[in-house]
Length: 306
Image (cartoon, rainbow, N blue to C red; front, top):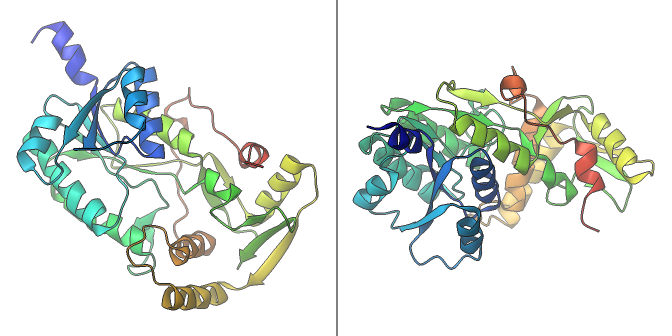
């Protein structure tokens, strides 16, 4: 193989889930780092993101995710498969398993699964539905003849501006259960994508990489909110973790929404996990790629939509 072909092969990243927010950001950072990106999208996709991916320089390839032969062909020549797929069991376990087998069959040496979460390996089974799915896939991944690296980033900091009901801007309060001094891990979507891109081009990554754009407590978030808005925020303790657990059960009973990826009770489960301290990421691997500049909680809250 000549040097030109070798360079192409070692920098060809196969990216699944490129039309989602995280996937788009991963593609962007990979291309900025000089990688060749082959973005796999479902056949017939009409996402407006496709033109943007092509304009940035990615090769967009439509595939049938149920076809083993198509997936294997799509992975051929890649140095790493990066998954940013989002969904429930049919995606996180079933589709990713087919993608994994395709990567192995195509001779791809490395695989980064769609984890991007708190440390599910430290949680008891049954404490979080979505993380249980990642645990199930992780067991399959560990049995495959491919080098795997899961990137764990805590909670996406961006969620604090709306989807995660912790910072109550109207009330000028930070809502919580349990201990206000429990350290928790937060990383923005873009910082997670930048780190993932660097890891995808790093041939010597370990099984797990743990990152946190900022480690903070509820009191720390309170200070960040006050600094970001220029207005004093207080704390609002609703109760202990047992109260939150009861609320999760009631919400799941009243509005189960089993087909939704992130129903309200799922977000509450995630928050319960974080506030428990069990999935705290340690040690952190933030320094592995020194060019990445981490975004603080304060900066995210300051740029929140009006």
